[in-house]
Amino acid sequence: MFLILVMLVIGAVAGPPAYDSKFESIDIDDIINNDRILKNYVECFLDRRPCVKEAAEIKVLLADALKNVCARCTPKQIKMIRKLDDVLMDRHKHVHEQILRKYDPQNKYRGPFRRFLEENS
Image 1 (spheres, one colour):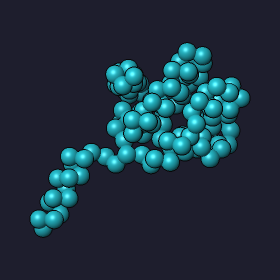
Image 2 (cartoon, helix red, strand yellow):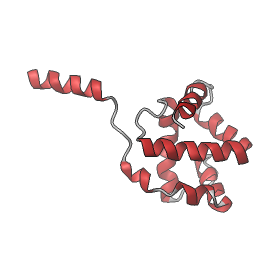
Image 3 (tube, helix red, strand yellow):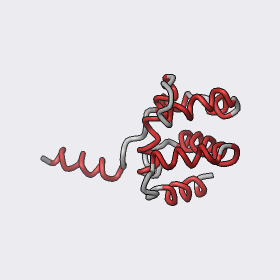
């Protein structure tokens, strides 16, 4: 019984487990610096085309990371998300808005997520 209690306390203190570190091997610069690749990723995120493996992996995280304000993100993943978000906001604002509408249709998470990214820049 004591062991179960200790495990529950450790779990509560440690917070949710981080996303898999395999996402850290994705070269975000290759994606954001190539409009063709970026377009393919965005089309995947918006369910307009089939996803390549890396895009599918990122897509799975989008809703959860937005909803939970990146609570499970590692520092490197936060940096990657911020880079992608900045590029979409600066160069593809309409696409950025489409993604937010898809993953946050009730506009509940954008503000906290934006503040989180700004605070972690």
